[in-house]
Image (cartoon, rainbow, N blue to C red; front, side, top):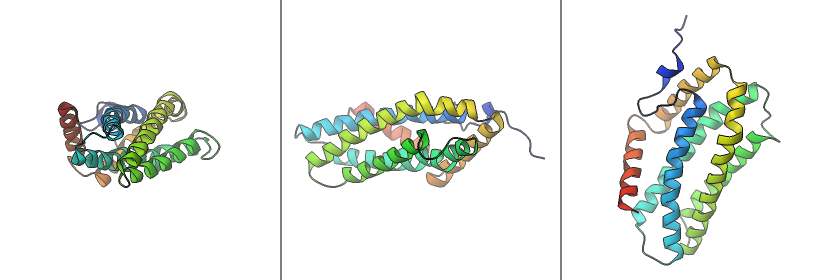
Length: 190
């Protein structure tokens, strides 16, 4: 028989959250910080100013790795299927909207990597607006629904599944390195 681990002990050291939705909200805060930086890059490109191309490339990698493969991966591989098992339809409701927006975001991140500065700035503007609205919907609508639908035992299992996603996508220590680099870019005023 497996020992039940209280939710408060399930979080990794870089997480303080004790529920899966709190963990995802924590990650939203990090993503919002990165979006603020990305928005500055976009405004500089629109104004024809020089930008730190390495910093911009790093942000694209951050959004592809942390926001998409890790954060959205947790939602798509674990949270959304759990909600479906508890009666939330995949199409025609919040899950369908979230999945479509994840795909839109992926396309915009790809668009940030190609084209003239004006086109890159346009993709940045679209991505920032999309993700801010997306986060608001998840925090305000989807996550409260999940908290009501999912029993504590399933929430505990989701926290463990989320940790497995982090290990598979990023590996040991990558989360911390991403946060450190984000803080460095913020401090530079990139």
